[in-house]
Each structure stands twice: as structure tokens, then as C-alpha cells.
Image 1 (cartoon, rainbow, N blue to C red):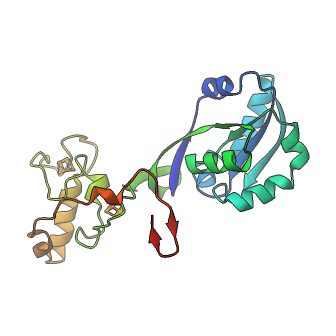
Image 2: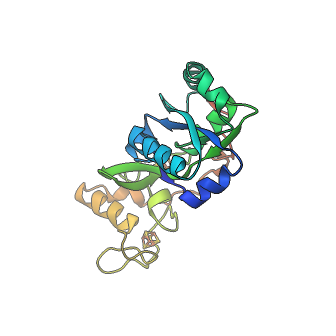
Length: 219
Ligand code: SF4
Ligand code: SF4
């Protein structure tokens, strides 16, 4: 899931300065689970924006916000509200904001959130970053614990030597050392042999600036 957090009211008001009429777009998926772009949050922002002198011409909780053709179709159903707006605030992830900019080409589109990481839901309202989408997954070797993301130094052959006696990371004493977790898991399974072989440096070319996944592979 893509984890986002709301921008501040000051940031949002600054982004739509001079745009009196705005249309709001949330998303039924990650942004709803993160409670940044579901119906309750978007309606709350509508009220706040109206209190601050803006007119909200309409809102849409896109199903989902990152699907270009679906978003275009859903916006067409709100054409009058869309046409009446000077600007658009997007309460989904950065991908959703860019898809909205594509769907609303030529119009003024503003992200209303900051996208922070790919995460898991640990419990309601609590998220943890577990994957950096590196494109070269090694979880089979590390028993389902990702050192690329969860080790503060991203070490492939850890630990670094700074793990505290109670198994915490030297960079962040609140966080478990990822390599301690990996060794504990391997040890419990009698599989420590797995990490006796040095892991080679990852092929960072697997993580270019922009990837497009199409049938047949990643470009
Ligand atoms: S190794 Fe870690 S960052 Fe890379 S794909 Fe696997 S879980 Fe994600
Ligand atoms: S203490 Fe563990 S998690 Fe922290 S940087 Fe060192 S190896 Fe990585």
C-alpha cells in the first residue's frame, strides 16, 4: 500500500491561491485506508476550504485514483462540476496526483498530500515501511525481512556491528535491527547457512528513475 499524509492547511491554501472554485479528488484505495483521501477526509477538507473562502464545485472519490481511463470516465460523469472549477486538489498518492494531471490536462492540479513510502498496515492507523520496490527481491534469502528497507544502512551482508544488546538499530534505538531479526529467524529454522555466502552488490540498474511494467517485463 502507498502511504501518504496530508499537507498542512497553509500549504494547501497557498497552492490554490487565486483559484476560488476547486474540485476535490480522493481515492477509494490506499488514500482511504491511510485516512487522507477517503470520503470522510475529503468532506472535512470541503468544509475547511469553504470556511476559508473557497467554493467547492464538487468532489469525487476515484475508484481508484491511479487508473487513468477510469478516472477520466468518472470525471466525465461530473463534467459540469469539473468545468466550473478553477483548480483541483488531489487527496491521493503522488501517482494519483499525476494521473489526475493527465486526466485534467491543461487544468490546474495540486497534490494535497505527501506520499511517504510503500507500507504495511500494522494495525488500524499504524503503518510500517517494509519494501522500497528495489526491483530485485531477496526476501527468499533473508526469510521475509527486507534489509534493503528495514536496515538503516541498507546492508546486504549485515549486521553492521552496531546492534545494541537488546537487538535495536544503532541508527534508531526505537527500531529492531533488521539483521538481528533475520538471524533470529534463520537460526530458529536451522537455516543460517543461507547467509554464510556473501551477497553480491545489487544491480542498481534495476531501479531506474521511472519504470513502466508492461506485458513481457519492466522497461
Ligand atoms: S528486497 Fe526489499 S525492497 Fe527489494 S523488492 Fe524485496 S522487499 Fe522490496
Ligand atoms: S544496527 Fe542493524 S539495522 Fe541498524 S544499521 Fe546496523 S545492521 Fe542495519
